[in-house]
Image 1: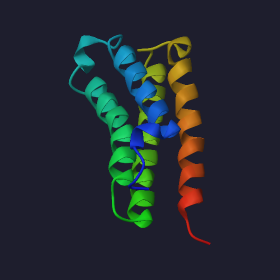
Image 2: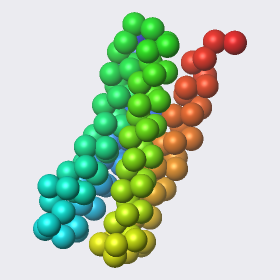
Image 3: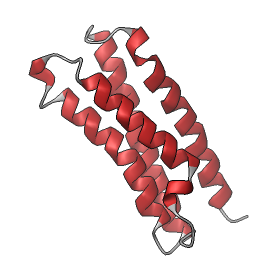
Image 4: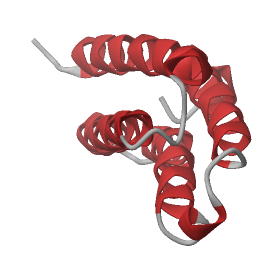
Length: 120
């Protein structure tokens, strides 16, 4: 994996799109959430493409798979945070549709990539 550029990975590209979308969404949250939920959502979003990139740059497939797992954990954390925003009426479901769609796509892609790296 090391010979290719992580930027070529479709899952990394989608994770970057999700990060941009989350940065847009958190601007809609109440001011009192600036250093709590908003900050946590940005951190989770940033973690996804960052772990994909870091894992791809590691020396072994085992490590890459581990970093993909961390990215998947951050993805699910972000999904939970979006749901919290909806449940406490900070965001309408219509505003989270794109992010939720990207989360679903990225989840499938991370699973597929991880499975493709596991030796038989």
